[in-house]
Every structure is written in C-alpha cells, then in structure tokens.
Image 1 (cartoon, protein in one colour):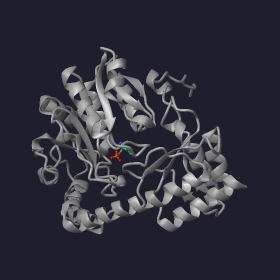
Image 2 (cartoon, rainbow, N blue to C red; image 1 turned 180 degrees about the vertical axis):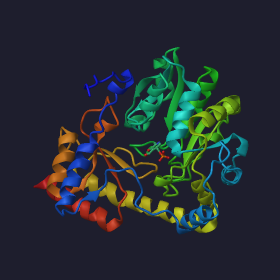
Image 3 (cartoon, helix red, strand yellow; image 1 turned 45 degrees about the horizontal axis):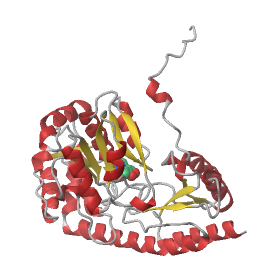
Image 4 (cartoon, rainbow, N blue to C red; image 1 turned 180 degrees about the horizontal axis):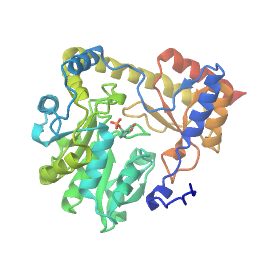
Length: 390
Ligand SMILES: Cc1ncc(COP(=O)(O)O)c(C=O)c1O
C-alpha cells in the first residue's frame, strides 16, 4: 500500500507543552526496573486507598446491574447527598444545580465550554494546574496569564485584574486552594474578585477540589459569597478516588439548562457504579476516614516544611491545604529541571520541576507532593539532604 502522507493535526495540538516531570517519571521507571527504591513525590495523587465502604458499595452496584447509562445530570441520590453536604457547611446549594461529572476534569471542560467563545480570553493565575490552559484552548479560548507571587499567595488580586483584564477576557478561573501551591484565595480578595466578575459581567469558575483538604481553619467554599458562578468539585482527592473519575459542577442558575444540555451531548453520563459507590462517601465511616487522612496530611506538611527550609528551600508561606509544597529552590540550584533529574538519578527521590506549572517564575521552583507515609517522607528528606550537602 502507498504510504499515506501525514495529515496535519489541529493547530492547538502544536502548542501543548510537554510535562517536564515525564523525564523524572521515565528515569524513575528505569531505576525501578533495576530494583532501585524510588520515593514518589511527583504525582498529585493521595497514597491512601479508597474507603472500603465505597469499594463494597461499588461491588454491590455492579452485582445489581448498575452498569447502564444514568440520568445525564448524575443519579438523583448523589446530587441530593452533595446538596446535603453543602447544607452541613451552611450553604444552600439545590441538587438541581449539581451536575455530576467525570472527575473535576470534565467539570472544568464543561464550564470552559459553557462560558468561552472562540477568541475570548480566560484570566488565570501563573502558576497554575497545567491542564487548565488546555480546557480553555480546546474550546477556542485564549489564556490571559496573570503573573502572581507569594505576596498574593500566588493567587490573582482584584487590583491586578482591574489593571490587566481586556474587554475580550470574559471569564476568570480560580483554584481555591490551588495546585501547585496549596494556597487558598484570601477571603477578602475572593469576595472582591467575585464582586468584580458580577460588576463587569464576567463568568467565574472556581476549582474547589482541595477545599475539604484545608489544614488551618475550615475553608469556606466561594459559594458562601455568591451563587452566581461555577464551582468545580471532585471525589478524587479528599475521598481518595482518583481512578474512579468522579466529580461535580455546581452551575449558576443563569447557565443551568444550557450547561446540562451540553453535558448530555459531551459525556452522556458519569460512570454508573462509581456514582452509586460514592453515596457511601457521605456516611460516617468514610467521612471519619477522610478526616483522619486530612489530619495526617497536615502532620506531613508540618513535618516537611521546617526540614526543607533547613536544607535551603524557601517556602515563604505555609500552604493552606492540598498536599503540595511549592518551594523556591534557588538556594540549591538555578535549574530545577536539571536538579529534579539529578535528584532522582542519584537518590531515587522523584519530585516535579516548577516549570510544569509556570511560564513566568524563574526556573528554580519545585513541587513536592507529600503523598507518602511519614517514614517514607523522612527517608526522602534524608536522601535529599545528603544529595544537597555532598
Ligand atoms: C487543581 C486541580 N484541578 C483538577 C484536577 C483534576 O481532578 P480530577 O481527578 O477530579 O479530574 C486536579 C488534579 O490533580 C487538580 O490538581
């Protein structure tokens, strides 16, 4: 058969940058195949397993034949359970506004598609979760980066938005707390930005998948301030269900009907038995387990930070939540990509270079995900200290 000329793919595929952490992952695999003990602190995934009550419920659901399409909005019982969960936080979020999604990823895509026309801008903090620009670009939008620094906890400020937003920027996307920093938006600033979006008639999407994983005072959802924006949630992180692909989107009334129609066309429905299983998340056993894990993550954060600082990493503000430390490693390297590659090769400790999350910060930042038990974290810290001081 005559060889077929490659047909050009969509232009937007050309601009997808590689994940630099994949080089670390590649070296980790190579080392592990040789029997080297690798400590994985690079992946944004909790090490805890899904609660056994959730797993049992999934098995029961499968046996009972819950393997067919569900209502496109998600099963009513799960939407009700989430509404009750918000009620326990003092929030009135009606189940009709809750769309169950295939992970937060589908919620972010859906909200981007619902709000953004081709050529319109979406305001977003740099640094950010690296998939966010893709959700925007795939629907034809353009990311308008807002450079941030530690003085605003790497979150945009209303002042910066007022100065930098163009008329064509129709949406603001926030994460509260954010990946890679673990920093929440300070509440007064959040209120101002919500107000700014309302006054300037812009859409707002707030990713709150780490909201329940906050370590100081309980972190209020942005829904406590307004119900006129999109809020993204997930079972992945707090409930340790990354592989189940289940999340939700709270949709503002003004966008409800159209967004739900789009969800139907894009996804048909979220996975049936995962939805049934997730009902168990809201029972006392699973909630206690999730809380226990949250406390453990806080202990890990508190263990890690002073030791990293003693090694020369700068952590200007303690992360509010999630399971990441985003640190300035300029005291130990001027090239974090090389540093991460050398660290894994020499010590078996896998961490992520900051350039995966930021275009504007100097190339000296790193992200450490504390997704290993305490003894493994201590071992990783020992290995890192030896590597740095050798
Ligand atoms: C900020 C943020 N949003 C969304 C996601 C995607 O989550 P999900 O597994 O629910 O799709 C992640 C995953 O790491 C994340 O860090």
